[in-house]
Image (tube, rainbow, N blue to C red):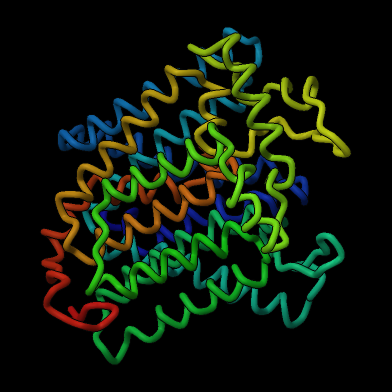
Length: 402
């Protein structure tokens, strides 16, 4: 077990998830599936061999399994279920099992994740210097950085959790050695700025600001969760950004109050979900691009461009219930360790995902890092206890010394 949960093994097993777009573009999908299946297979093997799991992880996996059931049943009902979706669901459960066992050696896990993103950072810089066109694209006449992910909105769901991983790693370092992960954080933030993704810049700015001021202002995890719920209802349900002063502020910033036609998509999805509110319309349905009509625009994607709305639209109230249950369980654990720096970093990382999810469908079952953060939250008490982390009141630095 020690080999499979070592930092280099973790970096190798998670690497295929990062290069999914590369494998797809180069018609190497079968190679990708084989490499991606390694970590889930190890996870299932660990479960069969060791068979033990604490109650928190068992409860989380039970909720995750019900969420997967919602995806499959919705697909069956709507005749949209594919073998690829079933495979993705099984791999999601297997990957979560693998991470659960890796958390037993948390320093190896966080080091492995940082090794992985060190490779990504190095490769991105090399391509920026020697193959500029491979990591840049033009969007509305401006050059933006997409990195190795091919899309500026895709890159943020990798870079933002990576910022959190490096900040946690810095917590393990001495004052003399923690500068290396902090340099990585600075580079990742630079990539996000160069991507010119508005939501990514807002999310990363909020996360770094809150971490920098944690000594003076400590926002409890439940407050962060309630803030997200308030923002979701205010923007997506009640469309407040299109009313009064909010609309004026957005327009003064040169932004579109419809958030690039997203409000039309949300309105359509909210009205249409009434026809299948319990089970949704299945992952990969084409209802939105088939029936939606937007002024002066054509929309061809099946996505709702909102994380929570996407879950509701594809898996209905049943899927949303169990996804929300996983979130609440995670934040209950974070609330109990809210004075610990690692707990603060994980809370703010999850909150940054929430910010992105307002305008993007980010809770993908084939992208691992949101789920890894959730498992870190579920196991935060064990992580804090096993590594004897110091209380955040002990030191005035941005990051604690071990």
